[in-house]
Length: 68
Image (cartoon, rainbow, N blue to C red; front, top):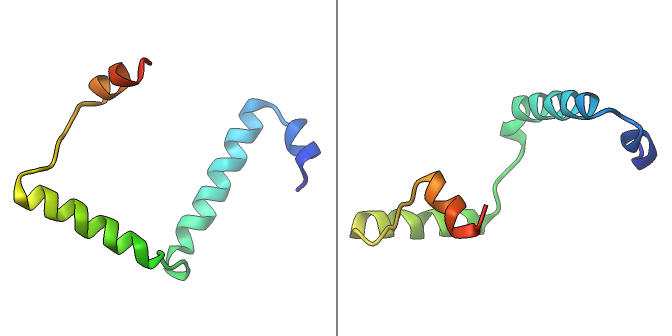
């Protein structure tokens, strides 16, 4: 599939194609290893949660902070 073919698709066709691709990729999830730095990021986040230093906001608050 090339860029021109994608550009010619309707929005609905693009969404259906994305859903089909995501479905296919999700069935092959075991074949894709996460990069090592992902473990570091997750460990840091877990540490902030356990230490009580994590900061949570609602989706509405986040959108408001970003001016959305």
